[in-house]
Image 1 (tube, rainbow, N blue to C red):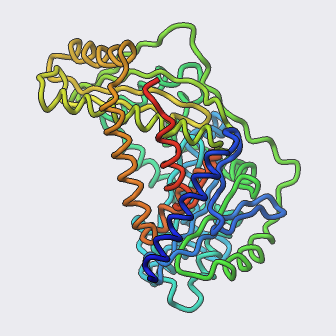
Image 2: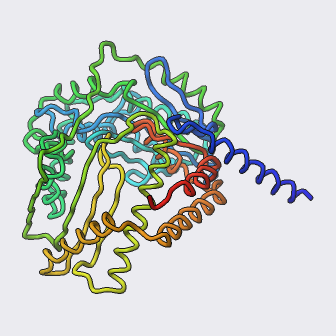
Image 3: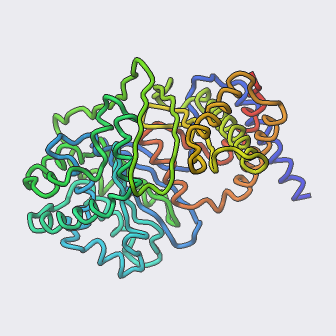
Length: 445
């Protein structure tokens, strides 16, 4: 009887969800997970806190900076990435290598669980899989995020020492793949600042910038209104929120702060073609792309949520065709794939890629474009659509059944996307019910 009541309750919940979703305004925002404690402090800093018991006695802590290489002036080319390195070389409460030394004493390894990355639009720092069963470790991790927000020391000695580290990284990155990517940026991002910032930067700038040039970049852009902290783990979310509000509210907001610009990739009047070669390239690769601005740059709406499933279905059906060609036919490529989705902030793109067989580059490109044109003219079959829908639904059923096993990183990645791009982070329950309503509304038309 108890099991019957549980099943009946779950069925009633499904009916309620479906009923609500069927009547919702398509332009209304997708609701975020109410179990996440989130807010914006008076100084402008955003926070996300999620209690999660998988794995036990572990937690992860992130600080998300809406700051990347695009914000650099020409004499700062590479300094967003340089600044990321400096966050591990002395802060107010952890001088020298204090952050790394402290956390490694508690079993948190640098590079594996203590890390960061810089891209053109953002910089994200993380402390992952931290054992939180020891006294004071939670407070110490919050203090690290606090220092990363506003209290880097940036001493001359540490800056000079890091120049050599960055120079070596610059050299080791100059692989054929990286060289070809750098050379292709003017074609991928024509007439845009994206083409001028490869993140690692200009070696001459790295070797010779004056100390205050780095400090100026830091003080101008590392500020609370462009920052979010996100944490998930085996802790009491209510108590954690109190700690966060108490500690991070003390960070002063920057007065008269400059507006954080949005960087466009201008439309061109005609298709752009580029050929990039390198003597060390292991194989040829062909890429075709159609880029456009997103139609909705605000918070994710129900219509936008449905659009994501349309993209997912298109990608699944298109790539299934390429797989069948490789497995059953004799195409002039060894790999063919398509992805329609997010490109850069504010942009989406259809990207098709093929790795042709040796000396069959022209045939590989023709075959790639033929499959795209075939879909454009004739579309997909009902069987292809039904199969892809069933696969998505099966994935969601598995995800829903294992919702108690979702990792801290997976939770936090959703908050990163919310802060930077406005993507919603609905509960797993909501997402599972939503997909059951949305998929039947998507037809071949």
